[in-house]
Length: 138
Image (cartoon, rainbow, N blue to C red; front, side, top):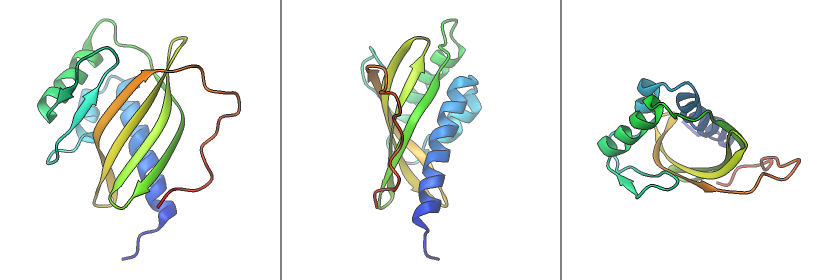
């Protein structure tokens, strides 16, 4: 079956939205489901040392999602590129009045995508009218 670039792009952005839904809803089961199980995974939370390995990454998310200071988050201006079986999404994260910029790296899994790396760090507020590009990178 031939893959559709538009369908691949939509599935990649849906996987990214699912990650942020898990974060916003503090859903540890959904967060567990978005991360790859059989590939190395890593996470760079702002201000933390690197977190490596699926168990450690999921423990870090459990601590964030169930902690008393779990932040409210909103994903803004997500744009993705697909390079064979790797998808990269760059987006802004709004937490209160602060902005971060994030890179989320996914690998193809069947018809969908699983997260293998998340990194975010401080960023200025996105420019007014910032919008994703019209086409994906294939």
